[in-house]
Length: 210
Ligand code: TYD
Picture 1 (cartoon, rainbow, N blue to C red):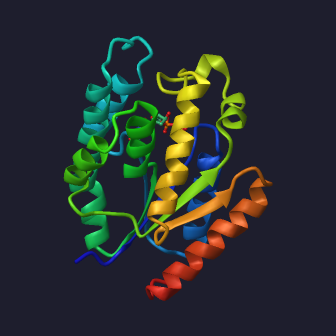
Picture 2 (picture 1 turned 90 degrees about the vertical axis):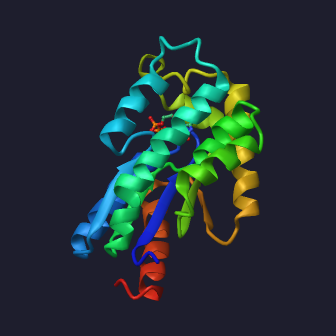
């Protein structure tokens, strides 16, 4: 049985996750709560190596299923090596993207459907987030915030792809409403910060962590 608390952040590219993760980092530091911050794809040595392959713009020939399996492989290693042990030690884990990114991007975006959920249920082996924040922002707005030069292989995709991903996110959030918290990401970042921290503080208090 895990003792810690597992938080994930999800949303379209350019939805402001990184800024909010930085605010969360400060919140945990100020409250002296031990917290592990990590990201996907990546988080471990093997995961970061896989990340380079997945996001490399020159790997344009990568087929959709290979992409889905690489994300899942990175996740399986991440769960086993870092996330599960931290949760077992009672730590809070904050992860920038997790299983829902695969369901949205590969399941909906790449049209791979439910196979992505099935693969990823093997990858996470029951280790699911306690709370998932979905940063809600229309993909066109998010995309306009990222300069063309800095786009990775996924960010380079057409707007139609990103629209399918976003629609997928909304469906997933609806389906797993018990763990999802939808955040209007078009607001001022300070207002969003207050929203997120308020929810996190309440959830941790309910768990007796703070
Ligand atoms: P990242 O560089 O972390 O982008 P961001 O800063 O916007 O979160 O993520 C890399 C890209 O990989 C991003 O476009 C989303 C995509 N992705 C998937 O397609 N499937 C997945 O399972 C994950 C974790 C990410």
